[in-house]
Amino acid sequence: MPLWRTKSNHSQESGNAALESDPKNDPVASASQAAGTEWLTGHLNHLTEDQEKKLQEFKKLCEENGYYKPGSEKEEASHDDATMLRFLRARRFDVNGAWGQFKDTEDWRKENAIESLYENIDVESYDAARRMYPQWTGRRDRRGIPVYVFEIKHLNSKNMAAYNNTMSDPSATAETHKSSKVPQRLLRLFALYENLLRFVMPLCSQLPRPHPDTPIVSSNNIVDVSGVGLKQFWNLKGHMQDASVLATAHYPETLDRIFIIGAPSFFPTVWGWIKRWFDPVTTSKIFILSSAEVLPTLSSFMDLSTIPKQYGGQLDWQWGDMPNLDGEARKLVGGLETPPAEGETKPIFMKGPVLFKGDHVEILGKVNGESRKSSIPVPVSQAAAPTTENPEQQKSDDALAAEVSEKLGLESGTTEKTANGDVAA
Image 1 (cartoon, helix red, strand yellow):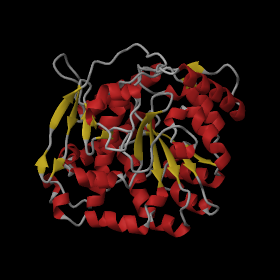
Image 2 (cartoon, one colour; image 1 turned 90 degrees about the vertical axis):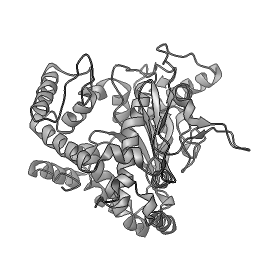
Image 3 (cartoon, one colour; image 1 turned 90 degrees about the horizontal axis):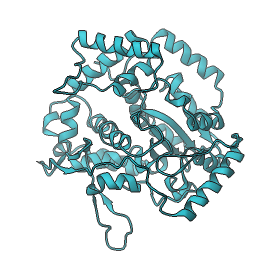
């Protein structure tokens, strides 16, 4: 079975047209859309009558073919509606198209024993992979969507060679996948996507945000390409393509936006390669920002406390760090942290695969071949929005939001308080 689906002729033609026209995506318009409710179209509890009918038709088709089991009083459905809608949105609510991709994905998951892989992967192998791909900062934008950062310059030849060497050790491969013909690098990548799908998104879905009726099913990515030469880009082509192809094929509609910053003068050449890894819908979510646009654009989506200091914000987070949770996330999964090391100020977040199950977190993975499977309870989430702990900081954020709105040309009067007391642009 191929790792990715072949594009239809129609999709390929659309992609070619998009490449030829190559308009620059507008961050101002995108910020304005995110500030309203337009981005929720096609998501759970924000469906048109026709979309609702398509969802029921899709679930029935999957059930008839043995790929979906409805819920009952005794057990949950095999797949929640938010997941089913990701496949429908990816195919613009074409039921047959969504069914084809859903079937391929379910077959792929079974063939590669994805759940078993995530449960049994070596913790150190998992963490080595985590340091080579986009990393969750532990923070969310104003809509509650998790923010990831990917700094390309760290993936130099020396670090890539060291990473590749970690895959030569037979003990680094889970016992359940010793006979797998899939390359070790891809097995590890599969596990990283499972963390997004089964820990980060469910956790963020249970945290305060403006639209709590709609689960979080996507992520935002800040991709820093500063300090990277053309040769390094070329050498990393396959590494980055693995992730984009996998997301398009088996984790559809898990990308909200990508903000590319620090682009060198030759980046248009690199962009020519990258665009061909995505469909036109995905490329419409990618924004290439000049240095002057970075902070105003990021600030239109997220608070200063969410933006890493190196990009003009206030977040103490550097490439390679484990997630630095916000206060609301810490209330739920603070049990995954240990006190700061001597001389440090931040708690230490647990390495390796974990699952967020609503009332508890499952700790998975193996250490020295031994399973560490266990669970920790999750406190009952408080539905009420918390009060702002620092009024002066809130005033600072309010002033920044007004300034950013002016810079981006957003209409006045569009700011509003979110469920966690932040200001939405």
